[in-house]
Image (cartoon, rainbow, N blue to C red; front, side, top):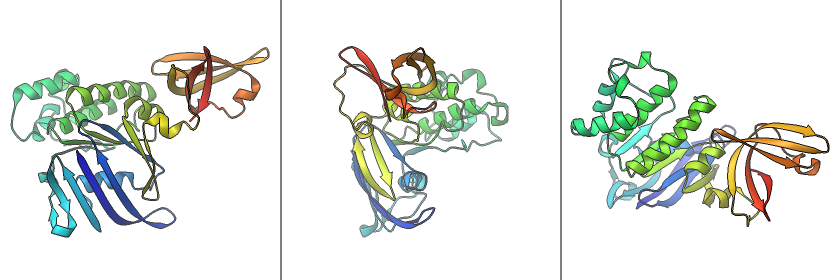
Length: 289
């Protein structure tokens, strides 16, 4: 169990506000922080990692206290067992892939290192330096390096935002696999609805430093309770008119599903919208998220 209670005065884009968070996270849970830019999501990750000071704070991870401002306890970053993946990868340019990963390991363990290289499909690149890698390959190395610490918490700050759609979809599956295989507790910052639905056990919605909603993604983002058994999330890539109906093409993973709708049903839908396809009485319908 992870306990996080923090307060910190922040300055947003147009206003000042207090980051005020009080949450509990279960071991091996996958959590996503969602909200507008400047809501305090990345600041929470940085406070957990010991990179940003607080006005008041208490952080307890697996019975070990990392932060308690009332008792003057504040473990430095190197004493907190955190794996942090930044948006810009932050790889060491003078080190090879293998050296970058090995650098993060507390104890040299070649068997574990080989396991990470195998899982992340990096064996053939282990002698390459970052300037020879693609964006997707660099991101794999950054995640592999974070896992190499055997972290109590894996922090992911929009790690896929700079990748193209196809690479991003593949990486979502990779992250899901890694989270389960290495039995991690993971906290992700994301604006991508399909990513959130695919990966998260719970999502916390932040606004001006406070959590305004929390729960399973479907409970947080779907206003209407659905009785249908089939629920798929995706993104609209095309809306075509055929005679008196419309055909909506929705990208779900690497597949495209087509749903027939009437004009009244598509009036608020646009290409690029994130949606849920559900069924009632065997009839599919679309809800905008």
